[in-house]
Image (cartoon, rainbow, N blue to C red; front, side, top):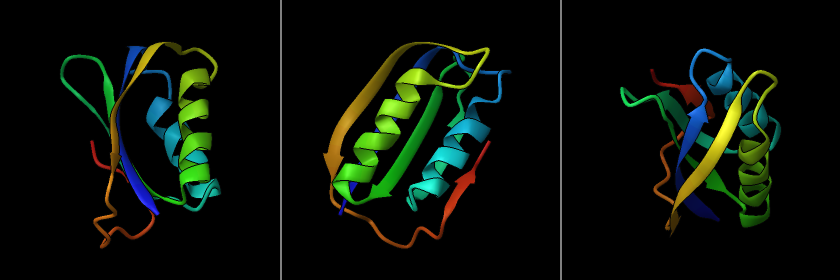
Length: 91
């Protein structure tokens, strides 16, 4: 079990990106959250099995229809914090 923090740049706001991330994370049974940032990027934290986190990162690079992902900036792998219940949109 690991935790990943990432920020996604490109055309990722106003295109359903947070809903896409939430759907993907829930289907992978990951816990965490996603939110829009004022600079136009999307930030997320997710935790679960490493293989499932890798699958989520691959999905982030693809994005939903109508989006354009320029980069997925990962903040590395971290220890699981626990306490997360499911996956939610925070803002």
